[in-house]
Image 1 (cartoon, rainbow, N blue to C red):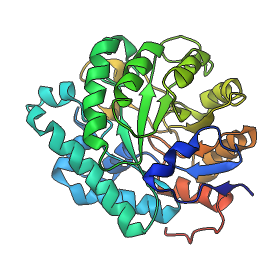
Image 2 (image 1 turned 180 degrees about the vertical axis):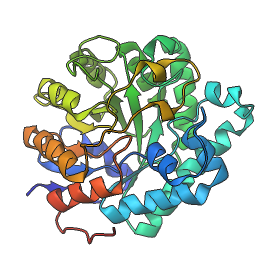
Image 3 (image 1 turned 90 degrees about the horizontal axis):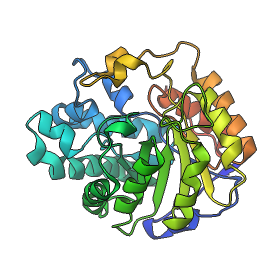
Image 4 (image 1 turned 60 degrees about the horizontal axis):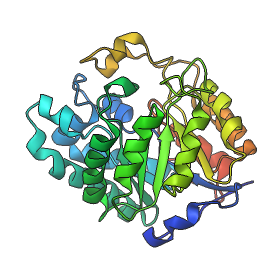
Amino acid sequence: MPQLVPTLEAAECSKFAKVDSMTLTLLDGGLGQELMARSTGRPTGLWSVQIQIDSPDLVQKVHRDYFLAGADVATTNSYAIHRDRLKRYGLEEQFADLHRQACQLAVSARDEHGHGLVAGSLGPIGGSYRPDCAPSVEQAAELYAEIALLQEPYVDVILLEAMASVEQARGAVMGARAGNKPVWLAVTVDDGDGTRLRSGEPVVDVLPLLDEFTLEALLVNCSVPEAIDQAIPLLVDQSWLIGAYANGFIKINEDFLADGATVDVLEKRSNLGPTAYADFVEGWVRQGVAIVGGCCEVGPAHIHELARRLKEPVPSNPF
C-alpha cells in the first residue's frame, strides 16, 4: 500500500519536486461547495467568501472535518477572494483582511489537528472556466503577486487552482513566484476531452511552465474524473510531481459561464459517492499520481474513503 508524505515543515516543501511517485499526499476535498451545503443562505456571486464573512467558524469546522477524515492538507478558503469580485459587492477594502482570515482559519484547524500543511488557494481572476475573461499576463502577475505575499506568512505552499489556459496559468505562476513558497499549478481540462484545457489548448502545453518557473507540482483539478482519466497518461511520464482532484458536477454548463451566474445552476452527479470516486483516484495513483484529493462536491466522506484505502495507519471513521 502506498505511504503518504509525512508531515513537513514549510521549509521542507521544496522537496516535493521530483520525488518518488509512490509517495502520496492526501489533499482535502472541495471547500466552497461543502460550505454551501452546510449553509442556510442562498448562493451569491461571492460564493464561499460570503460564508466566511457571515460564519467564519463554519469554515474552520470544515477544515477540521477534512483533517479528521484523513487529509494532510488544508486548502484556504481564498479561491474567490479577488479584487474584481469583491468590488462588485462594495467589499474591495476587505480584500487583505479576508485573505489573512482565510489563512488563519486554515492554520488554526491545522494547529488544532497537530500536524499537516496549509495550501494557499489562488483561483482564476475574471471567473472560473472563463480564460477569455482573464486579465493580461502582466496584469495577472501583479494581482497574484499581491495575494502570494499576503498569504506567505501563513501557508506552506501556494496552490494555483483551475487555470484554464496556458496564458492564464503563466500570469498566475509569475505572480506566485513573487513570494518564496513552493508553487503548485492546478489546471482544469475540458469535461468532454481531458487531453485539452478548457481553452482548447493541449494540456501538455502547460508543461514548459514547470521548468521555466521551477514549479514543484502540476495538478489537474475541477474537471469530471473521466476527463482527468484522459489527462493523466499525458502527464505522469514527466519528471515532475503530478496530482489530481476531480469535481462531482455532471458538467460545467453554459448557464454557469454566463456573467453573474451562481453555483446553484450546476448539478451534482448522483453516481460519484465515496466508493466510486476512490476507484477513480486509485487508478490515478497506479499510474504515478502523487497528490490526490477532491474538488467541488467531493466531501469529507470521500476523503475518508481515500484515506482508508491509501493511508497507514487508517484514520478512524468520524462519520
